[in-house]
Every structure is written in structure tokens, then in C-alpha cells.
Length: 374
Image (cartoon, rainbow, N blue to C red; front, side, top):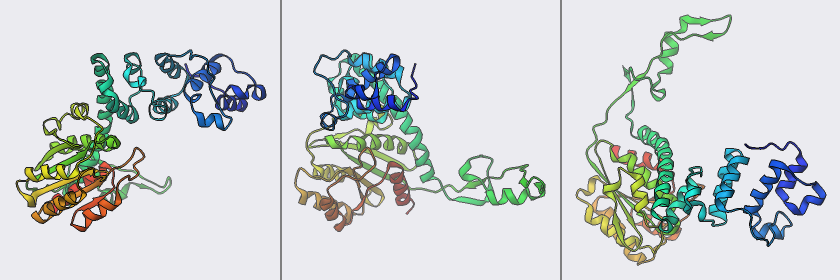
């Protein structure tokens, strides 16, 4: 059960830690337990100690990771739990949060914990790995649910006001006709318009010729967020009519993961984050997969920090563009969706005809849709 602390002094006491007890008073009950849980995590921050804020002592910790997880789930509201778990993994590197079976069975699935699983899955025994897979599956389900709708909207045909639709969807709602048809139901006294019937327009189907989409995903250690989004994006695009999706992960080697595109959980569990980066080699592999250049989209998801020959990378990109392929370099985004990439290399790719963008997965779907529509 979570606790409530109405007293502002007690809130400051929790924030500043035991060092402020003489000035702000002591805690008891649930508040004391919450203080211990916060101190277990934030007491290890040396910067806080330098600022005179909360700091931990040198005595042995009284909480194990499973104990701490249980405590925060009992004491804090959901949004605080997610922040504490994220800080434990990302800020303090407490990998046991995602490699301990007891913890994984209690932890709240979230994108930050999915990133941690992908970075530490090589440390897990089979039982822990199975629990981690369930966590990955839940986060992927949430991402798919959100992104699939964006992809459907991006690839939807234009509204055709000449034809009505029985499919009642918000994006097909014909506001103008609905209002016109119900004007007789205007109540001037209450100043309200009452609707007897809602109207929806149809959408024209686009005749789309087959396109080949080759997603090249940089799986170096800094690319974890982009890898996650690319895997989910590929799954969303997999069953689109007229679209054949190939997904290739690379560092200094090439791994074609196309057979797992329809199962993003399996795909992510096969990704091996880390290692160097040879983007030129990845583009060479893409060249070998091109059957119809005029109907091929190549999306390179990378931070463009080339570990191999940067000149060869540019030459490969130029050859693909000159053959008729459409090449998009998608700059890596961090967890806050901020671009993080080598702008010098990106500029060289633009000069030879590639398009470079820094966009969210939903925006990428819109770009692909525009290319397919011509």
C-alpha cells in the first residue's frame, strides 16, 4: 500500500535524506520505509553527496534488489515506480534489476527496461531469459499497438467524398455533411444541435505496385532505441499490400533477420548489441539484394559513425542512388527522440543523392508511404 505525506517538511526530509533529520524531524512507519528505499538507490550518487543532499553511509545495505523492488511497489504510485526502476538501470547500472528472476517477475514493463534487457540478455540463464522475453513481449505489444495505427493512417488512401462508408472511423468522419443533414434538429433554446445520423466517407484504394523495402539497422551499442523501433516498424510494414520488407542488422558483420520480421520479440532477442560499425559493408549487402532498383527503398538506420572506410560508404550510397534506388539515411534518435549522429558523414551522403532525416517511427512510415505513392 502506498503512503501519503501531506507535510511539506516531511517531503523535504525524504528528498534530502538522513542528513536533514535534525532540521526537519524524523520519519516513521511507511515514510521511513520509503526513505530507506530512496536511500538504497539515490544514496549511491556521489554528486548528491557533494551538494550536501541525500547520501548513503558505508554500512552494508539492508535491502537486496528483490527486497527493493517489492518495497517500491508497495510504497509508491505507478509513475514513481517506473522512474525509480528506470534510474536503477540507466543511471546506476544495477543490472540485477533485469537479470534476477524474482525481480523480473515483479517489474513493470517499460521501454527503458526493454533497453536494459536487450543490453544484458547475454548475462541471463534460461529461466531469467524466459521471464525477460515476457517483459519484451509486453513492451513490444504496447509499441505495436501505437505504431500500427500510425502506419495504417500513413498508408490509407485519400478520402473519397463521392462514396459513403458504413465503416464508422473517426478519420473518415464527414463533419460537413453530418451538420448539414441535421440542421433541422437545432435547438435554439438550448443552443445545441442534435444528430440523428452520422455520415462517413469512403477511401479510395491505391493500386500499389510491388516495392522492396530494405531496412539496414546499425546494432552498435549506442543504437538500442533505434533497433527497437526499427523491429516494431518492420513488423507493422510486413503485411502491407505490395510491400516486401527485408530487415538486416549489422555492426562489423551482417545478419539478415528477415525471417523473424513478423515476430519482433524473436527478432529483438536475436539482436547482438555492441561491437564496431561497418556501414559500407551493409550497403554492399543491400546492393546484392536489389532486384528492381526503381521499386526499391533502402532505409539506413544509423548514427553514421563509420568504423570502416567512409569513402567506400559514400561510393556505395552513390551507386545505389544512380541505379535508381531511393536511399534514406535515418539518423539515430536517443530515448528522448533527440537526433544523435555524425553530421559530417550525413552531409556527404546527401551530396551523392541520399536523403537524410531525423524522425520518429511514425514519421518514417509517412515518408515511406509518400515514396510508394510517387
